[in-house]
Each structure stands twice: as structure tokens, then as C-alpha cells.
Length: 229
Image 1 (spheres, one colour):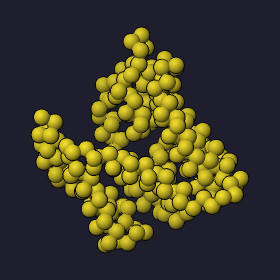
Image 2 (cartoon, rainbow, N blue to C red):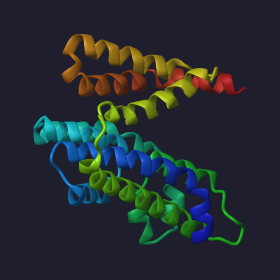
Image 3 (cartoon, rainbow, N blue to C red):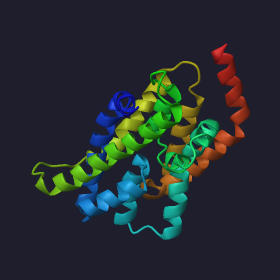
Image 4 (cartoon, rainbow, N blue to C red):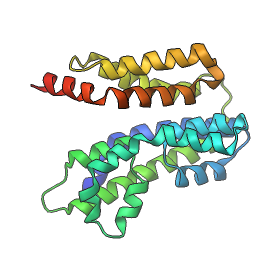
């Protein structure tokens, strides 16, 4: 089970150690060392939220704003969880950690279920989550240690997470079945930036995107069904 989970999670190893290192470097730049990187990677386990947390800490964002922002950024995980309820339910006490360790990449690997026939699915899913979590911790701590040693200009490293989501967005736009969600995201973000300014756009943009998607949910589902046929 360990061997199967490790082999399947190798792409995540490459991505998480790299992205985690970028997070650790950014955290170090605002005065927080390896122990803080370790603590945050262990307890948060959300790449996009951890990158956003660097700005929250540096900008002294209030507790209420931090809580709302965290909810909006991570609310997508509830959708992932709905798809895995039955699988997690069979895993006993391990399901509590599996719920916590659910990320975009972990969800993708767990749903694909590329395990040998003799390996228990629950054990395989648990190990996928554990290994992915471990990769992120290693990357974050390594980045925090490396931060003070870097002599070159690290400006722009905070664009790493944005670049990742731009790649995902590009793939969605190349998919001809349904580009409406991507257009909604772009339009809502641009509107929020124009109305609230670049420094305060994120939270209103997230509210606007979620609201529009909820209102248009049935229409979007119909478009997706028609495209699939």
C-alpha cells in the first residue's frame, strides 16, 4: 500500500515540494522562520490559503476578515467531501485525518483510485493524504530554511500560486464543453477590482463568484449535460 501510494503521488511530490518551498521563502521574508512554516504546514494544509495567509499576517488583517477569507478560499473542499462521503465513512478513525488532509491534488488521486487490486482502498486513500501532507511540510520547511541563504532577487516568487491557477484556468478555457464558469470568475474578479481596488478585491470577488454560480447552477448543469451528450 505504501509503495502504491508513493508511486501514484510522485507528481504531487514534485509540485508540493516546489510550491511549499515558495511559501516557506515568502514566510521567511516577513520575519517568520522554519518553526512557523512547519506549524502552518501541519495545521492548515491549504496551498492557496497559506499563500494568502502571508499577506494576511503582513497586512495585520483582523480575525473576522481572516476567518471569512479562509472560508471562502477553502469552501470548494466541501464539494470534494460530498463526493467521498461513502468512501471515508468506511475508514473508521482514519476518516477524521482524511477529511483534514483533503486537497485538490489529493482528491484527484483518491478519485482516480489507481491502486493494485490487492490493496485496500481505505488504506490507499489514507496514505495518499498522508504522503501529500508530508510533501507539503517538507517543501515549506525547506523553503523557510533556504530563505535567508538566497542571495538572488526573489521578487515575483509569490506569483507561484497564481501561475498554478492560471495553468488550471487555461486548461479549462481550452476545454470546449463549458467556459462559462471561467468567464464568471474573470468577470467577477475584474468587477471587484474596479469597485474595491486591488488591495480589497479578493473577498468581494469570492462572494460575487460564489453567488453567481449558485444562481446559475441549474443552467450550468444543463450546459454540462448537453456538452457531455
